[in-house]
Length: 338
Image 1 (cartoon, rainbow, N blue to C red):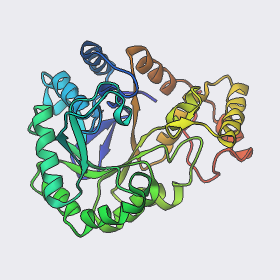
Image 2 (image 1 turned 90 degrees about the horizontal axis):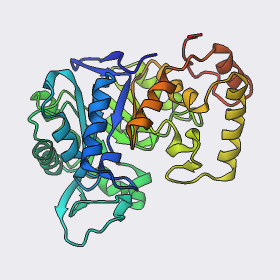
Image 3 (image 1 turned 90 degrees about the vertical axis):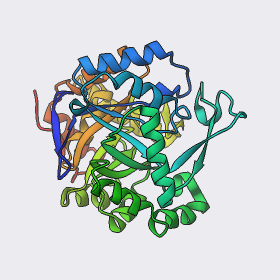
């Protein structure tokens, strides 16, 4: 499995590399990143063959989009795939401070949720300006769902479905302003609801189809595999617990999660395979998955991710995980490469 292999997205004309660069860290997630380091990271990713870059207005309160656009502007536009997100309008706000929403160096703009027709269109145009690009390849609806909105989910769901949000996305795709539309979410349930409401090309699913949890397999991924909707796997380390940092869903891992991770790690150790390598490769085996997006704070981190992606894993490891009840028996596993 190679980071620079490409996979076609049905009906869009887009080809996405196996590994994509998630650019939240370019917005200073938890720790600041210098502009020169951000540019160097994108350049190194490019030299490594990565041609899919994912950002969002929310990342660093517009900082990530600005840095991604600056770093990619001199590249031939047809040679890479760029995605950003809609659902939050970024309003000027002088009260923004370091640490807000986890951003170490946010710019002075405060997010305001808006999933209406006009909100989606305004967000798209704002992103064009920040990126300095006329064409955005993929537009995701960002963070719709109960996990983000709680009791207010119904209100924002109405904006998206009855208030014209999905219609705005469809119009942008029909006019060829964008090549593909979809969701960027942390929960599979709202993705199932959404593909019943709209003709989506992609679901960027963070943390819900991983070596640690496969509840999304039958209701979402298998369903997507039978249609033209494809999945981009994100959060494959479940906030880092599968890569050794003890975090799960952006907080400390609870005891039951830590225990399962320890069992997963023990099986991987029997085959001399890093747990993170198995975690990165597993979701890519599903036929609905076209790319895996990983974040990185440094060139060293991204290089390590590529090393994990290309680590040979014997099929006996996957069978052992399934036999021990650590992996769903129906989950597709990578083809043997050693």
